[in-house]
Length: 297
Image (cartoon, rainbow, N blue to C red; front, top):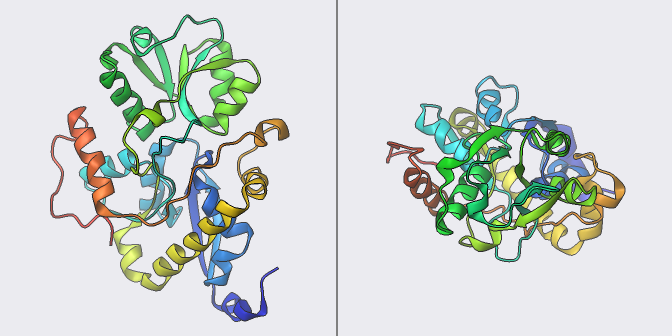
């Protein structure tokens, strides 16, 4: 229960619709909502699930949501395309310890290495999304040619069914969907490639329009503070956090018990985003990028 110490903030709450996709990276946000950290700091946050991550910038622009959780690549492509977005917080970062992000092949497919994906159809949660970019980077570092892979967009909730149907040969996915696919026998993990890439790079961002951030400075600070408090709670309450994740991502109880919770990292620095710019330019995804843009206000 919320303590009386911050009950007065409830009377002056700012309503925020927050667009997210169905992955556990948003665990600290879910906890901030369910455990009252957002409410404590005067925010009434309503989570709105968006199937395809690349649709989040448009939702922000239309004010369907005021804050969204795009991948860094979706965020940067939107900015490069002229949308005036900013990043106000992080979710999680890459880490050698994370095994719950990887590429899962359909059971029966003879895929064992990066080279085996050449000529295959691989489902990704968004064309140009971070997981696709990181997968291509992993293939490149393994000496394989990602240009020989046919990528198709598959939303997280449909990955198990699409893989089972044989529409794709593999999917690039993350916990908890990764756990469900493997747990049901639909697929097997070929590589947890995130553990083989540089550490400390943001996997998802909390973003908004610059106009909203400038006109709501108090809310931005409150949002960051609530996430920081929730992050500390996540680290010391892993089992409860898994149950809270289940309120936002529908999974069988058995799969939910095995969801990997990456260390939350709500504090975001501009330098972390600029690493992504370099990677994307190396994959010919960003021809030019406005150097004077303040990405993290």
